Length: 102
Image 1 (cartoon, rainbow, N blue to C red):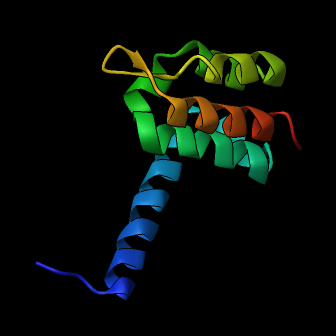
Image 2: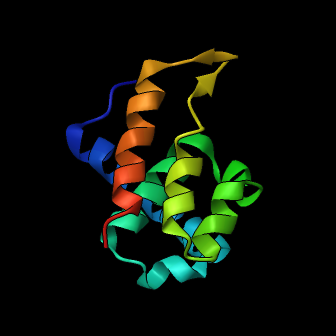
């Protein structure tokens, strides 16, 4: 079944909204952390899931507002199926850079 571009946009907005709601529930400190940091953690959770984020050292760093260590932690998430993937390396670099910006 095909969907329209508008339906796809609506589904994406719903998914992102749900993801950010979960992020703010687990790490309420992010509510006032700035758009870049919200984007980085939101992207991480959108791709890896709230369960992995909740149990991660990354979350502990975020909750402590230790952005330098958080930027190192987020770079560790580069494996899928036991293999290091270039796409995940690149994503982690972008997310790490965002965590270091206000």
